[in-house]
Image 1: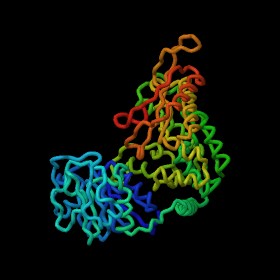
Image 2: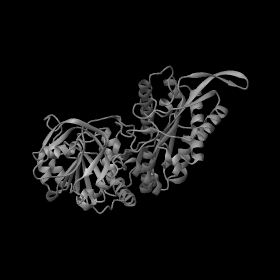
Image 3: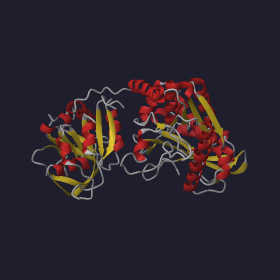
Image 4: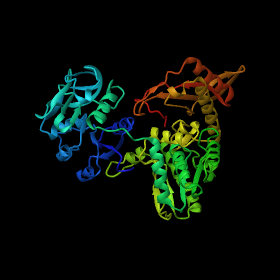
Length: 514
């Protein structure tokens, strides 16, 4: 990413919404990047940020084992916005008083703005609903700050030091539950930080292709193509940059959705100038999974076998040069970037075997979130069906088949899932749903078909709506659509006699079943 581009730093103090904050900033065509609170003050000075946002976090600022930061950051002349814990941290840094609240605030809270000419409350009504989540509160604001909003139980819901361009809010403007949260963030970016909002995907593609050409030169590139959105867009970018110098290795482990492997192959061999290598190994994977019912064991076996098959093929294709991955920004953050704690290892970001040597690893999408990757894919001409395909877990249908995985079960689930997705598309409600799919539980039920008793599989269908996938609600699919889905699955898919709809929200459930 070019250093000339205006940037906002999201300084992470352990908040669950750190990625969401950065995404909300980018929604305004302003580039945001997340750094852990352990990043040095010198690195922040050198990066030429237009503004800094302190995230929330689960700790108490008066606990000296909690994340803190050098107070000098407030004297850099860079505008600062503190959110939740970040708000309390600013107060603590400036000698305000933070205490445990007598009454904690969680969820939707009525807030009253007491300073309507505040820059961050421009076009925000005096009274509105915000999303609170705190057990501590600012009992006494720093002397150099003016309180600009309050709620019934929070005397300092917002405060500011106009002279130093430091603003702080106790609530979460980044979540959709805060009525005017988007306006508040927009005001910070454009009224306080004076951003121009000039970060566009067209510019990203042009700059990235030019950088790839310069870096790769006349050398070869090998890309692991999973068939997912991320690796597909990475492949398209690299193809645009170096054409036949790119070889894509696609491992079809037999656990993809119906006809998906063929669709991926056809798309990339027809649209892009590259070498496409497909490895079909479904039977081998099912053999390795024989008798395994524990979901974590299934995940590990699928991951290990994919790793072995993939790298064995890479050994055949590698001729030096570069190795490319479809790593996106959340993969970097969650897998541990810099000093950030590792949450989980992603299939897009894995360790290379020691015996395989490349000049370097190329990750052309490592600065982008998923929605931005989709925009790039559209601009590169990738078919809508692939760019906007449903989210799919790394182990594929292996975690949507409960219990032992067999070829027969895979076919049943593939067919049922295809019917469900087809009916959702035909009904015209697909854009209203965040994710929808079928699950094959390890359950058989009694039924009656053609006056005969049956004892066959039950299919569960799942559809959710969500803004961030951190929480989700089951989708309110019209009854007539559900009826058509059930009727078609039972009539068209062999060995199925019952369909149920999962109406569990997240939490307490998860979106996937395993």
